[in-house]
Length: 362
Image (cartoon, rainbow, N blue to C red; front, side):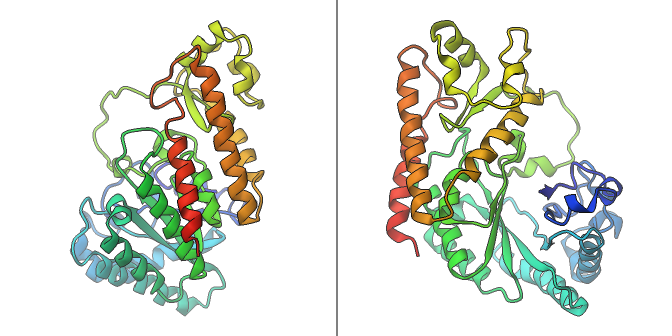
């Protein structure tokens, strides 16, 4: 599990059973230096607890103190890894990589080395959309990451601004797979955070772990999630249900339409501990209800665990699942038409990405 300080008070996390933490790690979430979103300010390493209105200038004086507090908290909780945080910029300055090393990598590595800890170390890296689509920036960030010493692995976060629920950009996805593959080729562990269903596609590059978060704002990285803005009424997303047989989240209104015109509509949706309740006539569909997300976690984890550890067999399995999903969508489309966020329009791109990646895999 990856623990999120925005969502959980530090004292509550401290009291968790050790068995829940020894196979987990903390996402320090220092993306914004002085924004106390959620429970962040309950953590001893939160910069605003060191200096009010903490800014980049303060990092020049407090980076070692920050490193000590952040590392100590992770060691006290005995997480599996020590995670070095990173910060976020809307538009990275020209000296961004220098700042990352000066303010985070070097002080954290220095302090960890002084402790002679046996814990493996993960470096948080945000890879923006342009870093995957611009070859010069792609090479720059990749060369920087692979050049870091005393790092065991990467906590990899892909940031993008796609408007569709599923990613359909061929070059973006292909280069994401290349990025993961090159990190693995350089013998780094790779742990990918904030993933949606594309995690099954990323799995063919054999990362060490991939997140399968519940809510939409945990299945993609958006910096606004860490901004402590005034609470305003926002329109919530439509309730959706994940189907491994479609490799897609389907809006419940389409499921209702399928129910009316397709007697065997349930065959497209997986069995789970939560399906019987959700398919009762009186179930009230709402994006805040827990059952659809618990259903997803149960179904998708089984789907991922069913994949072979052999890379060639895994590729064949994922391609087979994509073809099967496309065939299922053809059956559905004969009676129910779906929008771009519930249909299979992403699947052909994913299939083509897999074939292209297989040609360049290291």
